[in-house]
Image 1 (cartoon, one colour):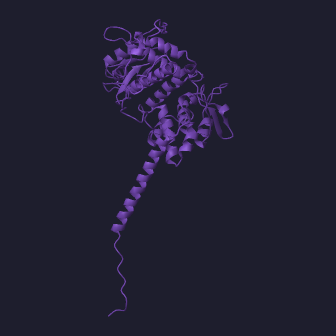
Image 2: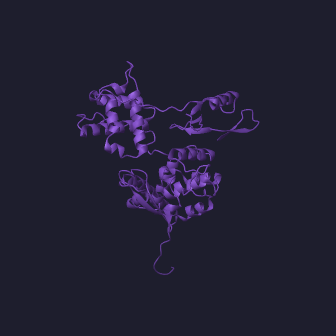
Length: 383
């Protein structure tokens, strides 16, 4: 729920189901988001009569929930048939359900796209795909470079599987480079002042404050944070099996329960009979996506529309690195199997430390120049 000041200056108004989203350019967009309904963007200026009329129309809009039916592809040479065969592969089915869904959604959407002749891309022969076709698919999504890069990655995986299973002779996506992202660091990393601002708006005892504390003091992903409960806490330690790659390569981490988090957990009322620490207003556990949407609302309410749940995970890793944690220690805390992510954080922390030392040396040099030299001692007595 977002609060707006009326244009005539007579006061402000809070509108139900109204949310703010910030795009990659920093522009704030307004949407009506009702449970079970698609988001509806509002284009009029907030607080005006036109805006209120647009808002009421969006509230009254009812779109029946539809389930997309996937018609089995009939042509074994088509891209759609290849995709559907991949979805049935044993390795693909060992991926987490969310990963399967995301990849399948992206590839099915690609197959449903039509060329200038009106033919679906999914009906075309996959053996005829060239790198130039992959580049065209990528460039068509240049307005959303992260999504474009993800799609290129999924096509690489698809054709790698096709080559390995002798369904294809080459991988046209292998050498197609990904787009340069405008923000290569991804989600914004929360600053200490932003954390303090969120805490000031959401006091201890609220679900919002508990959610922030869990994300920040543990560094867990959303999918793990929604499952965290007292059954995972024992003798001052948290032990939990991470959801990412749980089916293929499960990772269990043990991290200390920091005193700040322990105090907030004890001060926050929990739903009787529910092991999960985070619950909805109905006392039910959150889904990963539902929690992400709710946390987005809490950030908006605190005046932090550019902050996200994942940004707190990055903030925790940054704090650990700046406190002197090694790459191995970061890997152990976050459950990383590769040092790639850990190296990124330690490199930034080392750069900051070295820059600080350089500044100290510069200040010492300035101090040496400003202190007047001591008078030289003369030998012998006065003449």
